[in-house]
Image 1 (cartoon, helix red, strand yellow):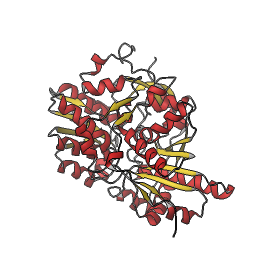
Image 2: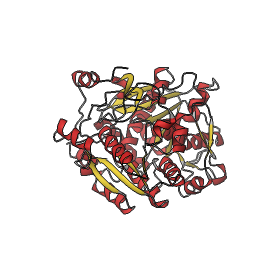
Image 3: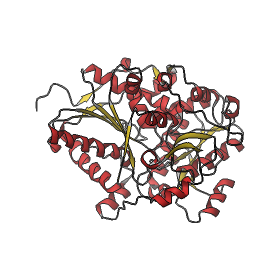
Image 4: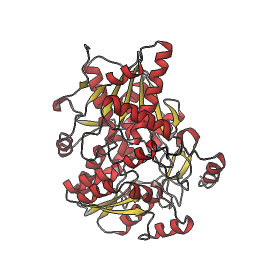
Length: 455
């Protein structure tokens, strides 16, 4: 096959980003501030210091600084697995017989198997710099917990992970990777915390949610001297760190003279999506270029497409600050399907504001449709994709097929956030015809949303 553009477009180490890009600096309508759950007043930095590392709090609350220099120690760690490749999906294009040109940014070339390491190493670095003993966190499918355990091992920090119970049971090997890197892993909700016991009393036999796991991790962090809580998605600081994905993607596209028509990312809490779209959204916000930006979420946890834009607790135990976001209600616990990390009840405040302002669109997809796309991709592109990533693959295939119908030669870029080798139980259920497409009813969502705080 002859082609002008190679299968893989790499940047050199010298071309890697040296600063993270903060989308909020270019937003006319800034994300609504975090509120104190008791007073409903904007949270001051001093109120967040007992929970988060001080430098990360500064990044979290900064809506005006456009670029944050990436410390040299973090850049050196990045060089172990970055820059990651931008891949032209020639084989998928041929399989679909589409005139569309499809590219994907592959973030699975590291032991954690996902993009999560980009923020994990940054947060561990700032924790070590502050002189902390360790950190606590939650994890859904396990990618974030794995990445953080690796980062903490690198900086000799203790790492306590609360893993959503259904994932803890379905993904024992992901759990063992975390333990290999020195982390302790507890299924959530658990009997080890006050909030865990409270959740279990209210929801006996629950399979858990990210909201539950966040509550437990925060409780342990604030009650253990020398510890802080770190989060793998949702927060502004996390989107900031993940901007390396989009910055590299845009640099690679510029290198080959390609301008995409649409950028597609899977959406759970927003880390991958926010990171991938960052520089493109920046151009859009500044009026320099226009792109279709599409967020793809599971129909089983549809915060963008069926949620409400309102202030809500970030966790099920209602101990965290209130954030204005598209939410299904902090009491919402998704069905125990295999959407993995896309189980969170809310969406990043930054992305929620951009969506509400019309700068991006969203759609939800069913699990069996997601795995059909994942299987097709694996068979022709040679990578077994994570279920989360496969939501973006589904939408990319759908858009490419629309191009086939219309004859339009559009350029599609999507984020392949990681690999699915720890998700084979899900693939097994799909192949055996045992995978469900459960979608919450309007009544279930209304019941959860009725408990939103009155702000």
